[in-house]
Image (cartoon, rainbow, N blue to C red):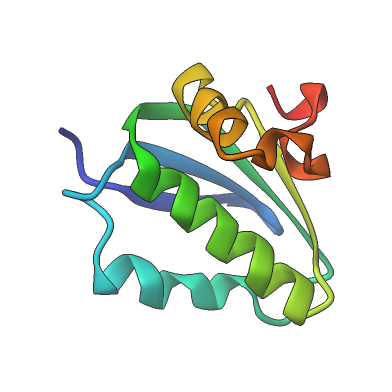
Length: 103
């Protein structure tokens, strides 16, 4: 499994690379959530995610909660099918963050 990286490609536009799994999401990942503070809008592209599990969905939900509490417009692009399936199983696919545009 590849290390999880959040890379800013342009102001407010980020790529996630590596694996969104229990093995790769740690305290350092949670500290990286500070990128959500102070921005007007953010787009997170998940096209380069190699593997995911429920920890990946939990991280996305945390991003959503933080963006809402900081009044930031958050969008996801290229949500991996496995992550979308997990969202569907838990009912999160009905959320605007998991729309067909994000896939």
